Image 1 (tube, rainbow, N blue to C red):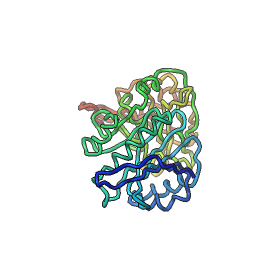
Image 2: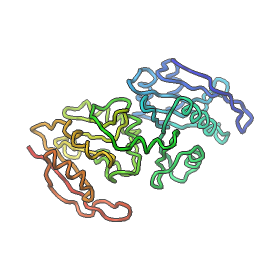
Image 3: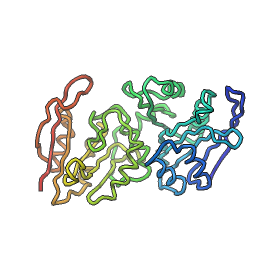
Image 4: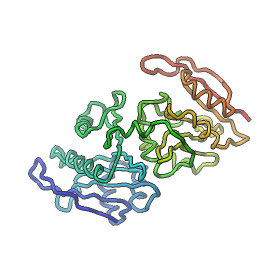
Length: 327
């Protein structure tokens, strides 16, 4: 357990709030933190208990907590990859009786300063577009992606350009560190509009709440997930092969999302997913995504159907190509 008192801040109410940074695992704090965030419901409560009790390889979770005396009155949580140091800002909450005192702003100020001091490089978050919270985050340097509530903050200017710069890649199994790295990949504007059919993710998208779901789904037979990464651990592509519940799990749905600078290595990513010989494999691609369609055909899928005007992308109707490999 590691709990560090970072600073004391005078709120708008003239009360003095102590900001504590709690680094998980921290089982002694479990009930207090879960009690504060109990409104999140399931499955988040189970995941909060998990991170507060177990060390997860490649992942660091920090809670920035506001205390008035012994009372927990606010929280902001970061879920971070160790390398590269990319994080997600989440579970932002102030106890209703203590709102409008500047607690959220104080915690954000402490968090961003601490993240920079620790060598942090970028963070993502999601909020309501043009909401009060949106403007608070914008004041700390978070920028909207495609005029939505998806936001990215480059703690190190130019980080994203370097992160997604073309370079050699390898393929590996998904791991805990990918929680934050996938959220960054799915949030950026560059790349296909349709990013995951299984999870209904379209540009820009969040993977914060989906990663725990994916983690659980990988216990199913034939379920697979691989990432494409650069030499310093930057995740630039993702593929999943998961049973499709729309068809009684008898069809395996293949989703592929790759940053456009890395289609050259995406064939290796697809090749790393073994296809069961007795299952139908199905995938979807925008008709305008010629590179993705070519990759899927290169893996043995053939065009099965075209769904006319199935999507609206940047105000224009787009056809969707259905591809399949049938046993």
